[in-house]
Length: 97
Image (cartoon, rainbow, N blue to C red):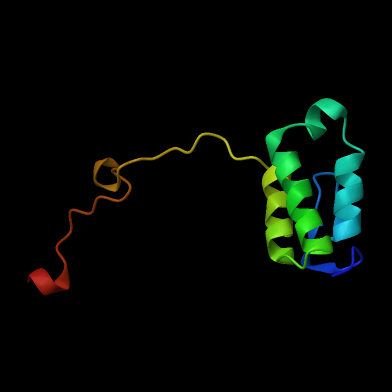
């Protein structure tokens, strides 16, 4: 598939710009500072972009890799539902009557 192939949905950057094709996403990565460009998420995104463009890989994987590199997740916060008073319900259910 050519580098001009469009993503199913454009990738919206934090400044409001949009990446709509594999070529735009690749150019975005190549213009990053070297220290950022060499980070694992960006290397993965570039690898998946190349796979999609040159080897008919899934374009959606390329889009997801770009999103993961652009918007990395922080440490997930897990809370037990049974210990959270917001989810606790002391009312009786109709089936319990």
